Length: 424
Length: 95
Image 1 (cartoon, each protein chain N blue to C red):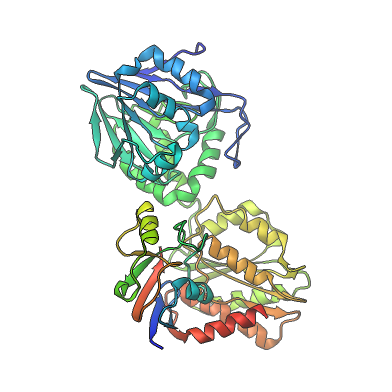
Image 2 (cartoon, rainbow over the protein chains, first blue to last red; image 1 turned 135 degrees about the vertical axis):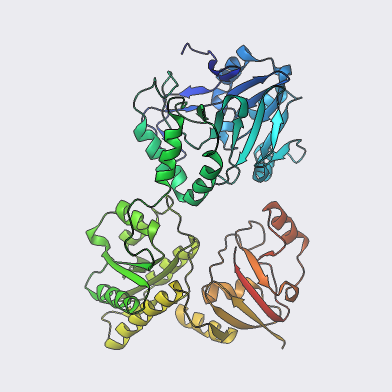
């Protein structure tokens, strides 16, 4: 690609984005070993011109220089935003100033974000949903609402007549190569997988919903918002997303609910409690319980386990008033998987005060897990009665998992007593 | 004092509470899955679904109404940090 030149993708369709080869970290969570691209596109029809997405603010000049090669500002009739994150909307305010007649099209869920982004309540825009389309004369842009890929506002835009899908961050990756097209650039397969694993993986149910909309389309080319433009075998990337959004291993106990008991133990006390929680759960039909010592494993495979589990129980000692680091390391590594539909619990032995269990319970609630059973805390060495309380915790968790827990009625005054006791 | 029964459907527990109690006062203590952030009716984190008994909650304030609208909440949603029980039976779940 010559510097500053708009790149044709299809008749009347140009890439007008920007290259950012020096970026080494994106959004705190992603490494970018050779940078990234901010892909924006211009589509010309017989009765209008659409600009799809813009670029990060620092690259606005490059974007406008490319755009000016293929369209005059007064020709632009539509600005489509597939995703409002600042790396795609950095040049939006200036584009709106230069093309004030252009109508803005955003997804229904992008409305509040747009107001927050542009700090204005006085905006004119058209919210669009799946099935809505706009005409550029001889060309039609149809919208596919694809929420949570990877923000609530995300959508894809399909140019019907050319079979081009402007997919936003879906099918994108952080990879910078001026040759732009997937059959010309360097090997970006790692970046494609890495991007999915960090950006899309927590939303795999939404990925599957989006694929249901995308798979029936005729796809000649996929034009994502980052990384190579997929013109060679575009459908292979759609198929790869379908694979990635499914569990990676066959589950031989598919009909059972799964409970994973993780623990870490200094003197074996929390370990004995963990065994009892596990054994209690195993007594209940329809539950498959597994026991793992965090000292014997690494975070990444445990995160994979957690993704597929229905329930999680964490056993932690309390050291200097806190749960221990391996527990926090695991609990701070769950942003890449969805956990909000799971059930959680905590337990542990302690020497002095035992705050760790409550702290882990709070963290689990913060991650939006259900924590229906109060954790068991044991001072130092568990007695047989205390181990039985752990087994009961396991049984109750298993009954919750299988939907067989007896419903309880309690009075507010009992709750107040319990919480006073817990603090004391 | 008039009482109300609040059922947290996600954990299968019903709590008998005095009229005037806000849901936030009960849900956290009982371990229900409703989560909180600002606790003052601004952020919308604690949006919950009222499965039944909406009529047994005090009316939405202007503030709560605004936050629910901004979050595109439905007719059956309320903020757990704001909603106050009046009496009768109320069934809620996160969401």
